[in-house]
Image (cartoon, rainbow, N blue to C red):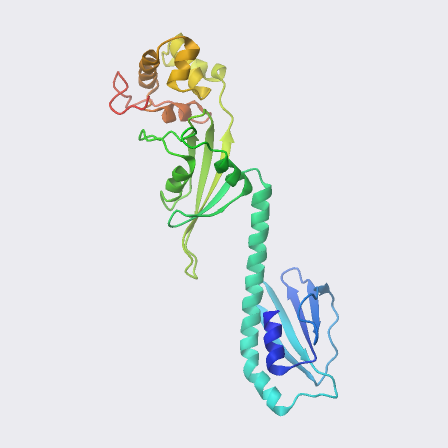
Length: 312
């Protein structure tokens, strides 16, 4: 519409007609804008082309593999184009063609982005788009709801280095971790576990910054009965297996102590033994190892007592 308005202000046609064909489907559309109408015209599918008219000035445009079309400026026979107007049109035509190509690409790109956002929002999979600086450029409805439901200070991500972090900062670190795609299991302090899929989008030829897409999927918590044979195999006692079951429920040490009628110090002692027997160093490592497709370490187990820096 801005291109049509510019053409009218410079050349004053009686009408402007825009025809274009989408590739590769070959769908044809036509929009006609009378002199008094700047907006509101709807594209209509039509194979009809205006009859050849000496008073018509045409600007072809072409976006490779997307579409091609023609912008036609029309005047009635009683008001023909003057020689000066034709020369002005010939000077303006290359710029109009370039503007139409850019407008077509921009509109198609915007339409594609709108459809992608709609598809992401109707999905129940939380999705985030980060830029190279770690800023959240987009969060799907499911992703925004997930962050909104996080209770500050209560639901955190267990980190291997022993420093629990809120979910969003942890996702930012994952997005900035490297240029290759990866999958990570995030163990939350409320007992849930999320599978994070990180997909970097490399810098494009037109110089746009790097972006990273992160999608999350909540994993169904493994039942204690399913993992119990593996725990027995590694030499865990009955009480230690009960502690693991409480960890799977998302209970903290104080809550485990209350549930099992033992002291919190006893819970910590059990956790040290569990870490040592299973070859893990943190609750995050314990929870990740319990999920299908993962296992306990067979080498480099921590020293008895949990090892220095063990996350209990």
